[in-house]
Every structure is written in structure tokens, then in C-alpha cells.
Image 1 (cartoon, one colour):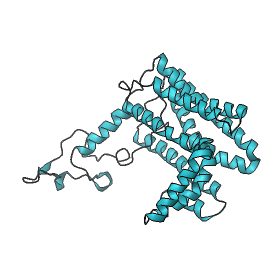
Image 2 (cartoon, one colour):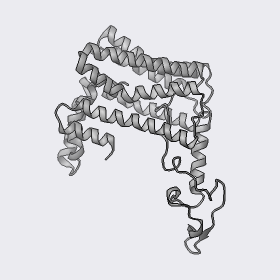
Image 3 (cartoon, helix red, strand yellow):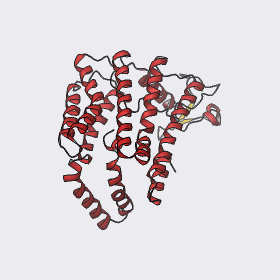
Image 4 (cartoon, one colour):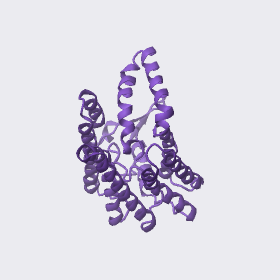
Length: 310
């Protein structure tokens, strides 16, 4: 069972366990981040950035790992005032780190997560001493099926063995290595403004919340306009790397979150979404196992700022 699944099960079984479930999830993400750092050091596969930039990326990753738990913990200990203070401080720290990466280190489009987790199937596999990258593996090609089968003599030791076709494993490793080692796309003035808007959007939203209140449409509209403007200014995606294109695609999909953000959610989406989930749970066998817990969890999820707005 994954830590995320464990946290959701914990949240569903106990009445006051949101903080505990989020602690489990945050701790698991921090352990993955720490473990990836240890593996990179042992495998001598450092991030293709300077040490100072790597530290900023690490701190940004840590903040993203613990932000939800810190919000929930602050609300539990200090109430709503403490919760919003912690939210503002975290968003301010993230914005400062991202602006340093954008302006000082020319890091280009900020991706999420800031540090790509290691693919343990391809990166954490030490190469066998007798098998060097680029070497040809003896193999047998079936006459009828044309299937390529590795011979027993060329099989690597058990700890370094993979189950893909010969040569396919190294090709995949090479592609992923090239993707990570590719420098970020140099941004022009328009693209820099677009990325700056994306970085500043959480702070603008918080400021508008403080000025107009949580029930006003102005923060929701302002945030949406900033997101749409940022994406429209980054419309020329042909020169971007594959990872940057995936990030822009992720941001475009996340625009759907505006359907789950107040006040739109409170006035329009909530009743329709809950009705649809109830309809599916009542009329489609097996769907209720997922739909009913989701119906119970959705109101709690929507109230957490870093879930819906982070």
C-alpha cells in the first residue's frame, strides 16, 4: 500500500484524522526526496545545475511537500488567523525562491515538482561490470515471430537485470538522461513576464482575498485572468523542451480547478458534482466504492487552501 493510499484510508477510518493522514503523506514525500538525493550521490548522477540552484530547488521541494500539513496544523493550533498567516508566509517564500530561479539562475519555466524524482527502474540500477553502455548484447531472433531474445550467456547479474528487450533498456536510459541534462529554454521578455505572472499569482490572490474577502468574485476572477494571461503569453511552445511542454500542459489542465474553487464551487459546482457522484454510486455497480468516499472527502478537500489554490 502506498503512503498516499494509507493516508486516505486513515482519513476515512477516523473522525479527526486529517492532520494524521497529511502527516503520513508529507513524511513519505520528504523521504522520497531524501532518498533520491542519497541515490544521486551514490550513483554520481548530480542534478545538471549549480550547487546554489540545487539548494533553492531542494528548499522549494520541501515547502511543497509540507505546505498542506503546515496549513492544517496551523489551523488546529492557532485558528484561522494563524492558518492564513502560515499560508501567506509559505506562498511568499515559494514566490521569492522561484523568482530567484527565474531571474538570477535563468531557470526558465518552473516545473512541478521542482526536482524530478528518480526513475528507480532505469536510474537506480547499477550496471553490471561486464556490461558497458553501448555494448552489443548477443541475442537470438526468432524466425517466425522476429522476437529478439537475450541469450543466457549475455544475461547480467540478478541485481542489475531488467526484463526489457535487448538494447531497449539503454535507449530508454539515454533518452531520460538527455531529457534531464537538456538546459532550460532561454526566455525572452514576453516569456519572462508570463512566468513572473504565474509566480506572482498566489500572492495576488491572497492580497485580493484580504482586500475583498473570501465571498467576493474579484479574487477568483483576478486569479483566473492572471493564469490565462500567463498561458497565452507562453503560446509559442515549439522551442520548449519536452519537460517544459508537459508543465504547460499541466497548468492548462489545472484550470479545471477553478470549478472547485470558491465562490464558483459554493454557488454552482458543489450541488452538481455531488448529485453526479450520488447518481453514479446508485446506478453503476462498484462505482459507489469510490464515489461515496469521494463525496465525503470533497468538502474537506475544498476547504484546504493548498489543495485547491496551491
